[in-house]
Amino acid sequence: MTALAPARGWAADSVAMFRIYLVRGLAAIAWAVAFSTTPASLSTASVLLLVAYPLIDVVATLLDARADPGSPARRLQLFNTALSAAAAVALGVAAVDGLAAVLATFGVWAIASGGAQVAVAVRRRVPELGRQWPMLTAGVLSAIAGATYLVAAAGPAPGLGALVTYTAAGGTFFVLQAATLAWRRRRPRDLPA
Image (tube, rainbow, N blue to C red; front, top):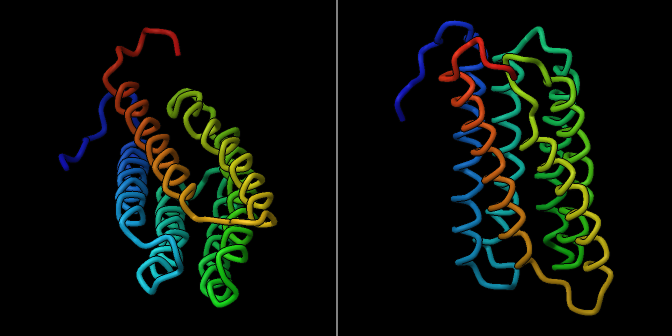
C-alpha cells in the first residue's frame, strides 16, 4: 500500500485514519471470505475466526484512538475496544453452547458496537473528515443486523451464514470511508464540503 503524505489542509490524523479504515475494511472482507469456506457447524476453524473478528476491531479501534488522541470520540472508542475484547471472549465461551448462543452473542455485540460506531461518526462530522456517511450507515446497519441475529438465534434453525454478508458489508463501508477521506484529500480546498 502506498502511504499518503499529508497534503495542504489534510491533517496527519486524517492520513492515519485513511490507513486504519482501509486496512480494517480489507481485513473484514478477507475475514468474510475465510469464514465462507468453513463448515456451517462450529468447527475449530470457524470458532477461531469468530473469536478473531472482534479482535480485529480491538486493534483497529486502539490504533484509531491513538491516531486521534484529542478527539471527543476517544472515550467511545475505548468503550468499543473493551466491548469488542469482551465479545471475543464471549464468542469463544458461547461456542461451547452451540450455534444459537454464538449467533445471540454476535447479535448483542453487533447492536452495541453499531451504536458506538454511530456515536463516534457523529462526533467526527468535521470538515477535515467529511460527513462520515459510510460509518453512520454501517453503524445503523450493524445494529439492525444484530437485532435480526437475536431473532434468528431464538428460531428453530439458527445459522452463521449471515455473518459473511455482515462482515463483508461492514468491510465495504470502511473501505468507502477510506475512499471518502482520500477523495477529500485530492479535492481543491475552495470546493464546498
